[in-house]
Amino acid sequence: MNRLFHVPLSPYCRKVRLSLAEKKIEVELVEEKYWEQDPDFLRRNPAGKVPVLKMDGMTMAESAPICEYLEEAYPEPSLLPKDPKQRYEVRRLVSWFDDKFHHEVTANLLYERVNKKVMGQGYPDSKNIKAGAKKIKFHLDYMGWLLDQRRWLAGGQMTLADFAAAAHLSSLDYISDVDWNRNANVREWYAKIKSRPAFRSILADQVPGFPPPAHYADLDF
Image (tube, rainbow, N blue to C red; front, side):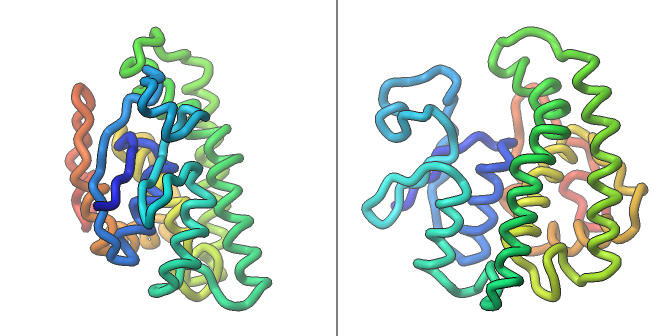
């Protein structure tokens, strides 16, 4: 049985979960408190991070190479275009969300509001939360600009770039930190992607002590 060691609100884990589900690859989800540095988990990934995917006789870590492996080993349905220039754009946007968006928004909102409490690391830092709330507006505007010119974030087809963005935004939406009224293009895009069967397990996530808002699992917002 394929097994994914994950944390429900981790955008990196969610990106892998979405890729697996879109390709209809069944996997057992195993919640891992990676911050406790359990020796068994460290043997799976000495970096001490999730996601970790046990599949095809391998133990794989880091969301980017995991998703690239899934694309190469299980190419249908494709989440990367065949054209090299379009593939570049997908990878650029995946890096945008997993690096810049993560640093400026996810770390300042989700990690302050949820991770600190779950990990017993103290109280949220209001300065970081304010910084994240300010920066997310810029990112939503940028997404809206992209979607003004394209059907999906990277072009005419849904790609890994959309899953990377949706992984971060869905995690933030779980704690009501996304203003879906800021940009109609982004709202329509998210409504499309959250309606896909691959999103069902994401919308069913429950984190003890942090109930999701009523609209979180509502496909019509």
